[in-house]
Length: 437
Image (cartoon, rainbow, N blue to C red; front, side):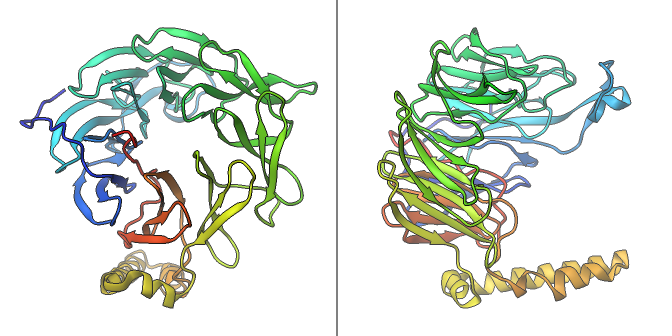
């Protein structure tokens, strides 16, 4: 760990939003206006961003793999089919939110894109393996960068993503395949459970409940189960062939596999269905669901008539749709949105076309020119490419896309601002400080 010549400032900053591009640049934006306060290039590909209020934390790895010989079980995939294990140089950087100054840096190795969580002033991360071929989870002091504890998560082969998350004094980790629940302060295992195949996990906002996929049904399939995080006791199971989307301390929101996708709210205790709504025309429901006390936000990509970002807000008690927003679909609406940024956007599009034409000449591949220039996105300027990732807080909903970030007012879906229109922010989930800051 290196300690640059900068001192921490504990004065609370204004509400800010931390966003990042896939290729290593982070921006801190004013949450009320979208103005850029500062930017930093981290020199690698980003992992999970964390905003602690007066300090932000950015893991990044350099996409230059290093390998060493390692014997492992056969058959092997990835590095190990060549009799080697590999890792990437990785670092975790703490930046002062006020001005982006570096407070401390920890360096190590990682298996790729790193995960990071902040719990009780402790950073939990898989970005700091001590050596190639070692897979660890580290607990780092958020103020100083010192290591509280570090544990092995098993051999280098097998699952790449093992750290799940941390909240309310608990760390959720996969060792081999079975998830374990650890104490944040000590790293001691509190309880564990068997998992037939790795699944996404869901935590309630307070961290009191955990959604797992490990309860056998009458058939050979497994059911989703809600458990108390304190001891793993079972609270409820979800209906077969349902897909969970979000979890609170009193209800779970899920989709059902029917002809038309439906968003369903179930109450814990008696399993009563609170409400259900139809949210589309396709045979499945895909998107990000964000549950808050005020509303349930469903964020997804509209495929018809074109790929647009869509946000639906529902009353969490009744299921009534409160509002709906989608990103601009046509050139005129985009020009109104860009406003004074229009010359910047047009210049960016022109330069992208020039780069595509040059690449087509170098590779002697006219299909590149045909695909990216003659039939490029300029013919559908409102269409979004890639992911759509969102977060909610401070009375707003923030949506990151390949056309920058949109900020909506949480009460009515009114578009407040649009920032960084030429930046692809669709790969990294934006981060907000705790509202108690």
